[in-house]
Length: 165
Image (tube, rainbow, N blue to C red; front, side, top):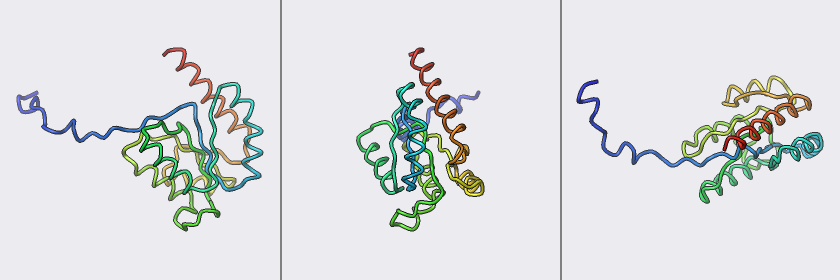
């Protein structure tokens, strides 16, 4: 390393933004299918209770994005996981009716630690599209066994993490 390499760059540390942390025990579901989400929540309830997970449901992307902005202002943690549906017909803004656009908006936020985003449509082709937009993984909406196993893993990992703290 040369002496030049050792010279600190002024202001470099100052330019780092404080990032809003994540709460790994919290997950969100962004989906406007009330019946499907009701069924999912009933299927997941035992896991939610067993691992003390916190779930929040948003029927529109606009509501979820507003909550992200509220939490950013209040410096409150964001969820560690977001289940994202492909189509949100109840959103008034056409841009927000496609889950891929919502994922891109979240991924563009550099002042938050990025949550794990699960593509969660009932159709494989839409899950593939959400993944191409920035989702981390895909779980088909009707695959209760896979989504429940995912939440169990989330809960177990939080339990292990909390024991270490």
